[in-house]
Length: 160
Image (cartoon, rainbow, N blue to C red):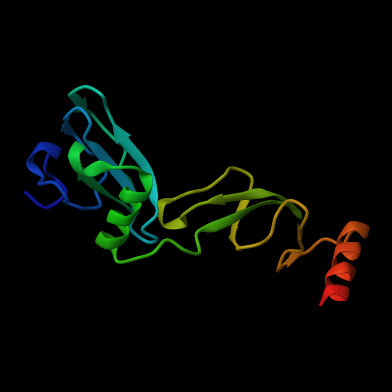
């Protein structure tokens, strides 16, 4: 049996593998943390308040998982620290702007390696563009400054 083919119950705590389906028993309070193998960012946290059978947690392309016991789980920040240590990556550069035509609709955390997509839209990595911006087909174009922007910039310049 290859790593990743085992049922969840056969995997020791702290095991991380990329597989297509996750099955087994999760004890009350234990959690399964599904994360991006490319970025190390948590994508989903699966848990239960009762002993529960996990039929298919949907761990997919580009994802790994970590089974964490109830006593070690903590909060999302603690779980992200565990994943960061395990993956050896600090999540970064995973903010993608949603573009439809030339319109910027918003931004999401995404991972193309995990097949993230939105029908009819492009996801383009960018750390700053927002719905006030536009897309010219090659680059993001910031909005023209508003009177308020100019006013606050002038005040800041006068102060110093």
